[in-house]
Picture (cartoon, rainbow, N blue to C red):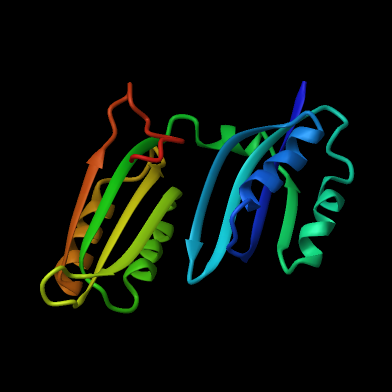
Length: 186
């Protein structure tokens, strides 16, 4: 039997940081189940779901004191396995947003989804200069779970955001055989 933990680490980007973090997890007999890592504004950020054998999680955060002394912020939180079962029967959808970057895009989409009780399971966004003009372009990809009792009005709301903010937004249901959950290529 294993216990899952969510581990986050942020701090200076440097070669070897991922090796050091995973070495500390392995030293406890643990395994990285899922992870996301990125360099953001010169800082490195790690988000991991770590499985440890029962009883081996006590003091895990203390294993990272050496990294904390080097300027890293580390948090370890026991994962609630029952929470992952709370969305059984919900329908997965992919949302793609593209257009000129400006303030409030993520907020507008997140507010609409929250207002309909829709859970954001995964979301990635970036802003990059356009190849020719150099104007900032925004791209966001999300995987959401829609409760069974929510009507399709939420998709009209997403379309309205696209129209109002001059964005291309696509919403597509994920086929039953391809939930996309945990798939970084959603």
